[in-house]
Amino acid sequence: MANDYFVPAILAMIFCFWPTGIIALIKASNARSAMSRGDTVEAETESKKAKTWVIVSIVVGVIMIVLVGIMAGLQYRSTTGSS
Image 1 (cartoon, one colour):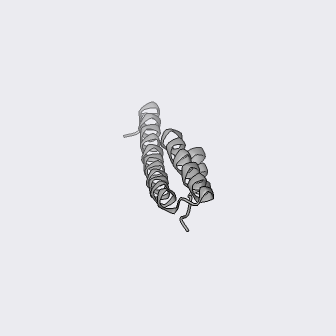
Image 2 (image 1 turned 90 degrees about the vertical axis):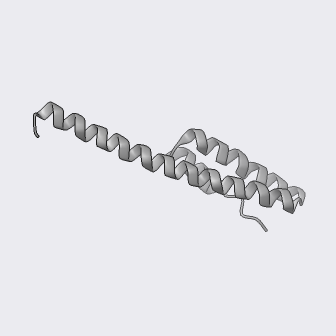
């Protein structure tokens, strides 16, 4: 039985990067629907896609948080006159 990654997709969408999180949620929903129909091949395929998009969302979210932190630090540094 394939994992549908529905909860991780929701969390990735809310807390990481919503554009790719939405794709993960759609793929997770497709996997869940395929499992309920008994289509295990399609469920497995959509589950793998959902997992991939969850990982992409997390990675992009972390990168964006780091970049925003760096930019905020540089902005703070330039406004305080520290070198």
